[in-house]
Image 1 (spheres, one colour):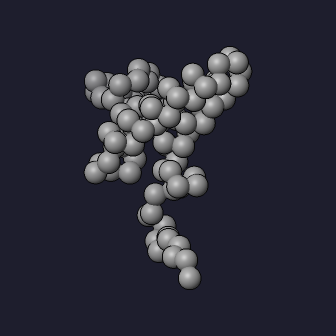
Image 2: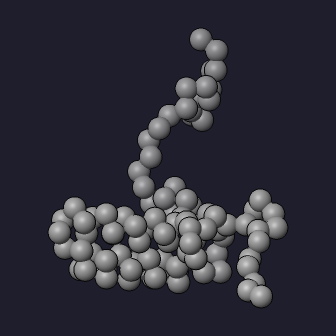
Length: 93
């Protein structure tokens, strides 16, 4: 009889086939770029290497490590309309 991994809780990381979801997205983005650019084998080898390195980088870290990296390194200037900026001392007009 074959053994299967059944997720026991909701907190188990999301999987696509055998990979974590973020590694799978990296791999499939290279797959799509390779089809569009007609350099399939070059882009597949590059995306496979990037996905492998990303999997090695995030091993032993939090499952949403990718979102933390995006938060720290991407410029996000979205302002919240409900919460005023911290340097404003008077909240009421």
